[in-house]
Image 1: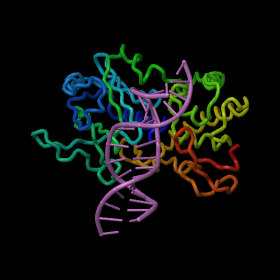
Image 2: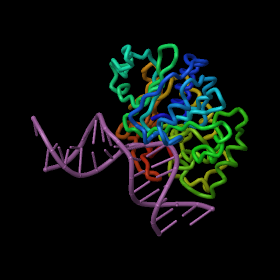
Image 3: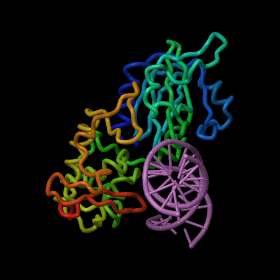
Image 4: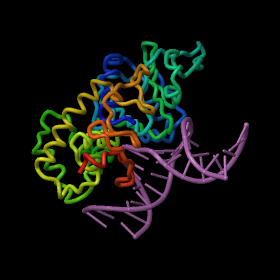
Length: 293
DNA sequence: AATCGTTCCTGATAGC
DNA sequence: TGCTATCAGGAACGAT
């Protein structure tokens, strides 16, 4: 599922391909997922002929900076990922296939539900098995008022995000399980289920530990591991145990260093104890009951 | 104000 | 074999 490293992988991939291209058409079959404007014909007429001037990431959100001072926000949620490929329509504008040829081999690339057609003959397609992704087109000056955006905490990789700032963010909550706090997008934005599990295993801290009982040293450890592991995960192009793929449909390589996430029943690579799966804040958490205190 | 449960959705898997 | 029930999971939303 796309968290910070996966979203960053998509953004970097697209930035290499689509800057300064123009959106000439849109296709979708998930009208409900387009939250703004709600009326699709309005959405279509607004976005048509806009140029993609930049693409950035905010937490797990992908932001397309469009001409005429518009932002297109896409949140891929659980199973969405953006793909880039050459579109195939016949001369009447009908699809020969929604899915560009090279992407067809992998079932995870076949759930196309939203497509931006570009003026170079290529498309940006959203493959989203569970149809949870969200799409919003807004004026730049409305952007910061969006509920999806206005409460977002700082980005864990921002160079100004010092340990002091991290500590202050965590301490905004008086208590709570550390895993839940790390995944709270209003505290820090970008970490989800995979990387919270992986960070806490490396920090040797139990996912249910209450933040009120974490020492300064333990918090520092979490901070330092977070700042190292997320860039490494970006370098590996993310985690593809289930559905995530990069824009060319390829799997990421985080698997090579995945230590606990979805490894229940297997042995901890540090101490050999069997890794457990439990519920933390209503979500699954994976951890080593021996190493993580 | 903060926290909890529900909702969105569908492929994969377990159980019968 | 083929059916049904359960599960996964980010984040908004409604209820408490």
